[in-house]
Length: 125
Image 1 (cartoon, rainbow, N blue to C red):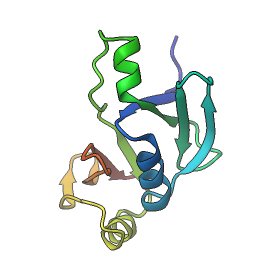
Image 2 (cartoon, rainbow, N blue to C red; image 1 turned 135 degrees about the vertical axis):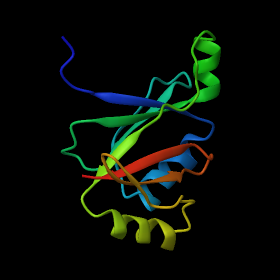
Image 3 (spheres, helix red, strand yellow; image 1 turned 180 degrees about the horizontal axis):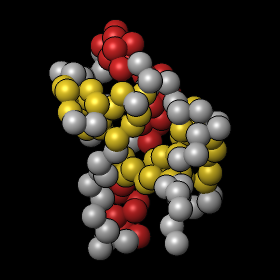
């Protein structure tokens, strides 16, 4: 039985720029970085070192060559925050593309885009 989301794999065109976005603008931390010495590199990031779930940033071009059958579109990710207004302000000040704050049945939400125009959502919980 699956009992936890462990890692979410995001396929990006430029790993260095993706790491820069997630660490400098979204406030994530690099948990680990690995390279097999043959061009296969992945970077694990998370909101904190204690986070139960992390994101692994993979090189989209390399994964497409290794496994052409995979759909490499960005997964839909929903993040949670305790202070939506502060996060929205922080993202806006850092010139992150953000959508309007919307009231949904589960809580207030806004979306944001990373440096490659992949969109994610944040909900106040």
